[in-house]
Image (tube, rainbow, N blue to C red; front, top):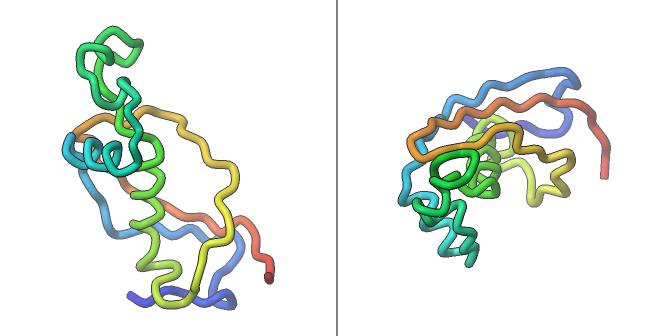
Length: 113
């Protein structure tokens, strides 16, 4: 599916994205390696076992990047040259190896740049 142009988005519209992905340990390890993020909560099973989570967490920036990527086919594939910003990013729940991520986008506002 091709992306949408500015005029095609409707404020209040919600798009459930078709693509899903189950996050593997290797996905998380590669992302941490590429970004040089050596936070033991993401990489060290013994360390993470002693935390309130009891196991390693998937890097939150990987989770966000994955969700953005999954949104592209139904939103901006081939129709924009850049994203201008990400506002109000929250990580309300931890993500663990083996979790399947789904994404939903809601158009909350439109502004011309």
